[in-house]
Length: 117
Length: 112
Image: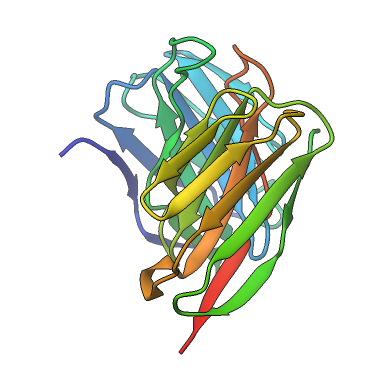
């Protein structure tokens, strides 16, 4: 089945540790995104990438890093510099192209819940 | 950055009732999207809107792209238990900008 796979579903981190969240898609989508979701809030964009070996900061990039070495993979590292990392992290992807009236929307994985021990 | 005001924040309704929720923006959007999120899962796309004034249905769901391009509405008719969840609006400001801005969500609860 085609889709977006995030792993693990639940992740625990000790303070001061870096941790990497996986996102893989087999939809041949060009663009991939990472969002953070806190209780009672909407999704906030951390990083996004529209092409391999290129990515841009979103609205809350501080304390996070990403890489896009392959089209199908966009891992997110939560570094020790992120002081409040406990959240639900969502990965999304979409194809690029189309026009004003047919631009494809983003589709999401099932998320990774990160907690601090 | 741009902000989307989504209302109401929460709704408590009885099964069979109709539901309305909306999003407003301080600036123009070229695309409006509506997603539903179940607990512990990722959002699932319900409806995508691309033209001002556009009215689109998906089963019991109907969404409209406001004529001012600063708002959008989602209606659910004859609600059923599986409609429970959080509904998010999202807007894309202009063609070529692949970033979305999300509303804060409307939590729908159905009272037995």
